[in-house]
Image (cartoon, rainbow, N blue to C red; front, top):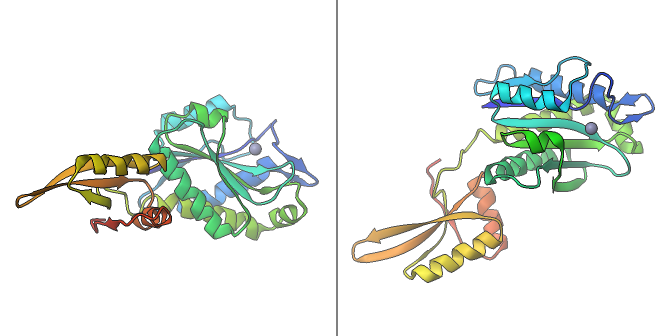
Amino acid sequence: MRIFIDPGHGGHDPGAVYKNLKEKDLTLAIAKRISAQLYHHPKIVLSLSRSVDETVSLHQRVEKAHAFKADLFISIHINAGGGTGFESYRYLHTREKTKGYHERVHQSIIAELKVRDRGIKKGDFYVLRNTRMPAVLTESYFIDHPNDYAMLQKQQTINSIATAHVKGITSLLDKKTTPSSVICGSFKNRDKAEKRQALLKSHGFETTLTLMTMGMNRYYRVNVHSALTCAQVQARLRLLGLASFSVKNN
Ligand SMILES: [Zn+2]
């Protein structure tokens, strides 16, 4: 998997500034830690939009990611302007794949950082809008919040933000979802199967129908497709009161 890491800002653009901290320095430090942690990973090839304190335009960042043929673009930022915790973004209109990547990266980071979860959000950022591959933008901590500011001064925090991102990235490698990995209902009647599909669609799930034949019996099986793991999909279906089972083929 080819991962493009984009440390936000740099050079003439410091990003958010508070007291002695500049966003551009923090994002670069985090990106370098991520790079060091993933350098020897057998399944990941990494590239950075910048590895020093230099000015790189948003257009150049996107072009570099395209030239690198990245599978995932992650832009790293530090928040500012009132608040605390972590939030992340994808573009307003994205494919299901981006949504799945985004959710897994976000959840892995939250699990690691244990800060306030400000949510999985959508935003109209240049690098998200113009990248052709799935793209996610993360905002770790608030530079101008007293507690977050104190945290961001510590090397330990920079390391844990990097580790959180690494876990998010590597979570995309395990258990690639295969079609029919989660089954949510089998129906003799096609209308009923399609009703189930419509219900799942209204909750954001992508589904397909498979016609199964067993002896004289034919039935329609509803398959749920997602970039989430089977366990995560099943947990969500349970919240909707729907029984499901996973086919253990991954
Ligand atoms: Zn920023």
